[in-house]
Length: 118
Image (cartoon, rainbow, N blue to C red; front, side, top):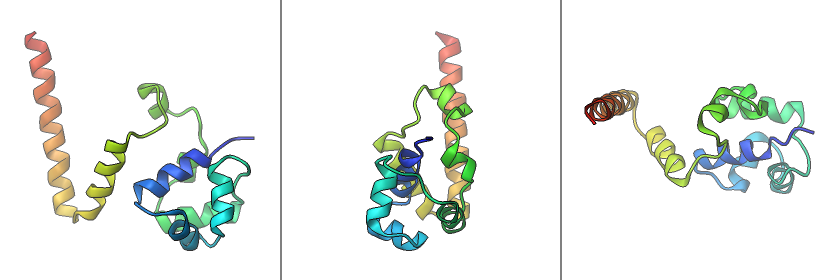
């Protein structure tokens, strides 16, 4: 059985929601969500579709275990800082999000330049 509970928990935390709020949005009980997140059961296809619809996410991201993100980072778990950054990013309007994206690209470029000088 594929354990996708941690991926659903991560999606819930990224959206800064508790189990009651998240389960209500996808039409299941909080207890059922808790069981899914703990890996005691997997969500039904209807639940996966509700998650996709409500949170505009790719179902593959919830069920694929061996993806490029995990391989490249050796971790499938976002840090608290990353979760916080994503939550804050989602509070911004589209223009501000693009501005943040550009700032990140500049910082990456500057860091590459620094490492080349060393």
